Image 1 (cartoon, helix red, strand yellow):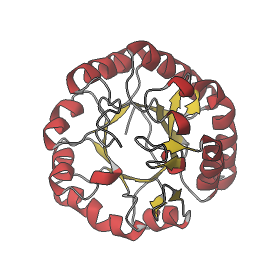
Image 2 (tube, rainbow, N blue to C red; image 1 turned 120 degrees about the vertical axis):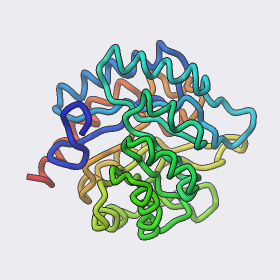
Image 3 (cartoon, rainbow, N blue to C red; image 1 turned 135 degrees about the vertical axis):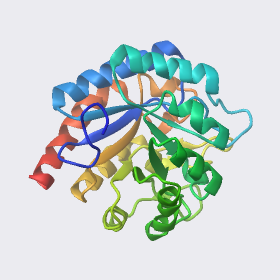
Image 4 (cartoon, rainbow, N blue to C red; image 1 turned 90 degrees about the vertical axis):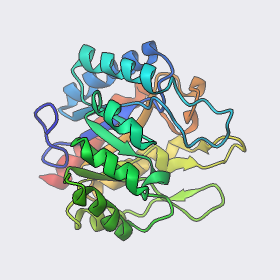
Length: 267
């Protein structure tokens, strides 16, 4: 339960926010706007931003402010807007301090099989959102989730974010949603990372954000009850993942359509 709602039940849930924390102003502007959008549409909202994006294409890439400063900003968002928080962890030692602020600890896709990281996240007793590795079939997530369960925590989400076959692209298979749900876990569909073109810009990834709404609609129609978006006031100026982020001013219209599809599918 988060702020009196349960993920994967009778209301659409959205994880959304900038890829990485660039500044307090951008984070606050995004959180304030998206909270209002989701309240108006009766959608559950969890704010998303990363204090460190460790899985970058280049050592020169922007990563964020780091653990200490980033958690201070996320704590300020939580206090100011009364929002639950999701953020990534990359190392076992990050789990405990991150759990003091975040309500959901997210395991990055490239790290989803790292046993020690999963165990550390599980032991915080927070919700653990495991991103399916781009290199895995959905059925393989069962044994990964079991690592969290065997560590004493059954509060698990699994995120579908596309599958790579190489050549700087990802493919989304909507059968994955049912396969994972049939294991007993709520599925989060990551619409913006699914349109990422890994390494597509040479020393950084690029993306095709125009396809994110299409994939999000398809995922809700296929039964997903939770969606993940990276959203930024000015994606063209974003310091990472700008090519696949949704502009903040487009969030209301997109979420409205998605919520209408959700109500049809789940009525």
